[in-house]
Image 1: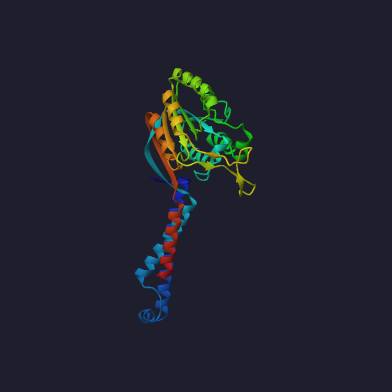
Image 2: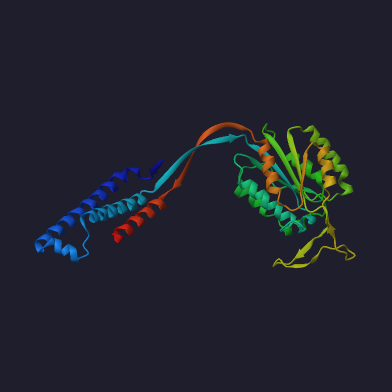
Length: 336
């Protein structure tokens, strides 16, 4: 449906367009009378480029219609479309992101951490009515949001963007998944909304954290209201070095042990699948990062419930079409 922001002035535009058309015809009639008084009109028409009557009517129509279209552009035309909008129940989603130094490996482009951040950001921008939280972990876990928020741009994404290579090198080395599970559980609210935990890690096993994993699994089994998804990232078939970069982003070397040997990192899907099954969750692995978007979207859609259908109005500015029509009519006027 077409409407205008200044609907009350539409009649004025039509009246002015009619006046322009009338004036054009009056001027044509006056010119014809002058030519008739000047001499033989048929002879003048034959040897001059003066338009014939039907062409003058077309020219008058095109110039008045062009002026009308320009006037309607000023009134800001809009096109409204009504569609059915499926309202879905809001979720609480807590992302648990591995920020250990092994996440800087580049078997996933640009690296494991950055690719995870990119896909989480893309998912967040498509959410509506959900609340999201963020926990990061290495040797220890840290909750970067005290409670889930629905302010995606100003809060969640701004905090997510702060997690970079400098942050990774600042936190204690390690991959303490058990501590991350426990802290993430405490991040959820006590409301009855559906709760989803998405933990993303390369999953390098550390024996010293096994006891904490067992403790976390026990607590998770008691919390039957949390759906758990563990996503592994990185190539499990090939060990990758961890590059060091300077301020310009150039590789200056690779992480090494105290003995000078290059450190290689390789994900451990077996370990991740084992703890996921113990916790009653779902495990998926992405070796390249290309499947993260699909995995995240699949998780969210699985837990979304339609609670109602509302009519949603979509309004688009269509001024460009009126302006284009005016230019076409002006071109026709000059061609005629």
